[in-house]
Image (cartoon, rainbow, N blue to C red; front, side, top):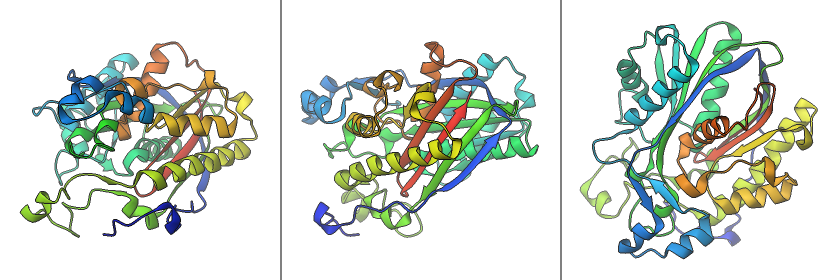
Length: 346
């Protein structure tokens, strides 16, 4: 794998056109989230040689949560799902589909969703969906298709990740960015005024080397030599990812607004994938979004990958910032490269 990517190489991935669509007649009937108790502040990273002020200036992150050794992705997913089920006030036996978005499964196989299904005692098919930090958006679109088609009556959609297991503590540009969390929603049929008013979703595998975890798959099985070189950890080319993320946000937001025939003035709340405050602020400014409409919790949790958007959704809902009939703009992006943006009528 080449490590010589620079801005001048013109390897900033050009977004392929997204697939556009609409999925109405679907509503969110429950929401919940979970983070591990282990709080890691910037100051706590000083022992590893990090500069707390640098982290804030470059990322906007003040703290994050790391799961202890006995907690895995499935445990966070189960807790978020249980809180979601309680909040919805439904019988878990009525759940007939479970989709789990994650880039940090408990193990190579079986799917982590199967472990979550067992712990929750559900009688439902369960599967993982891997689109990195865009996984929750992909899972929401997939689950909404099941609901809209009548193939599912009550779908549990989860985004969960234990990023602290795949980031290298010696990588000072990457390690402080990530935290662990899970978030969940329940989808059911709704009125034809509810659902995903419009969405834009896509991938561009030509950018795979910009953000990946090289070792552990069939291409490069685990080896002691690879581990010594840190190949079991996340590898990220920050600069091209930064520029690509801002561009893909601008492109896909324009796409979904045009398709829905609305403007940003019609949007009640905006939640971007909580990757980096500089990305969020740049996209907000470039698109001319009212900052008061943008919900952020990055400073308290860091980048929680697939959990990022549902975690923010849950907090925004509990803060009273989401009401029935509101129009929400959600956008996720990450390794793949993969992206998904949607307008949701709550």
